[in-house]
Length: 398
Image 1 (cartoon, rainbow, N blue to C red):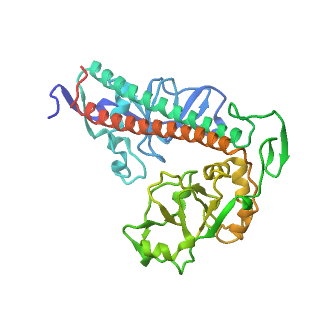
Image 2 (image 1 turned 60 degrees about the vertical axis):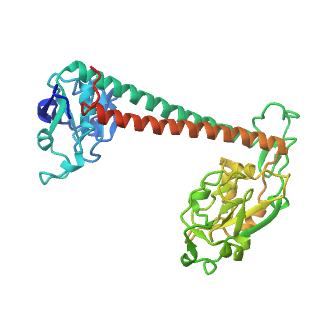
Image 3 (image 1 turned 90 degrees about the horizontal axis):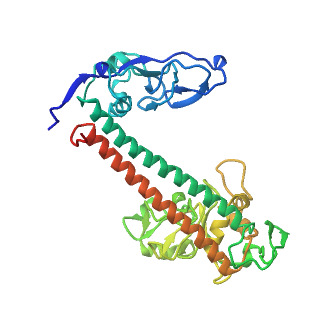
């Protein structure tokens, strides 16, 4: 039951909306005033048309997003801004507007976009006191601040991880205890530490084979459980992603012996979205997998090169370019003679312990990013629940 101390009003009596103002690019002058479009902050100008704080939403173009603007600003003609808050808290109004389904009212008057007169007729509920509005707005703003800080932290960790890959996988930066000298040498893969090698991959391979031909595996072979069939999404990251749509029976997998990859193997996409590469970790969900006809799998000699190292290197900037050698330029993207081309590639190779140490560090950063992303998802869910309860009056803060 909704709280009786709340009131119901047409939106037009809570927040009167007004069309924004024209401002062609040729008339914009250098300044610090935000120019707000239907998609948010788009430019700056030397002059403002509306005093902040203000609330803006899309009239044409992007519809449904609501923006709270603290400084004075210039809302473009593709937007609607709140001209009069009728003594309601502006930040609260910004959250209240986010509960409205603008798309339902798009084109209601026969004109593409949102008509402010239609929106003004919508009946909304809100606290009778400004103090409660402010309390709700502050709680939701705090949740938004947490979400934004987590997003920024995740972005920073991605940058750190990217930088670490470029430095560690080429030997430009060494982990403590591994550098035997400060000398470097020029090789087929560029400049690397003097104590690293740059062997041809063929010298490290125990076995390599293509995926099955189209005639070897058909949709009629797919079953609900068994041996998973890999696709491009599975090999989009360094580690194999265990998420599958199709399976074949164990008997069918045995008949496709050369196309079966197991833990420790590396899988490469040579047709379609080419250049994708993953290794199958020892803790993967399945013992074996069937590679698709657009992939090949590689098994390396034990103790010489870490499969994770190979996948990590070919995800680096320099490695990714080398993996695309032999790329065709007509029809469906493909690597010509893929296994032959792959065999001829060189790879920078530190000692096995250093390979392991670098891989462990990079994957620990992955684990940190994954943990932060889960926290971000949870924070968004909590904030959504807060909005639903606070803006309906089911939870009171005053």
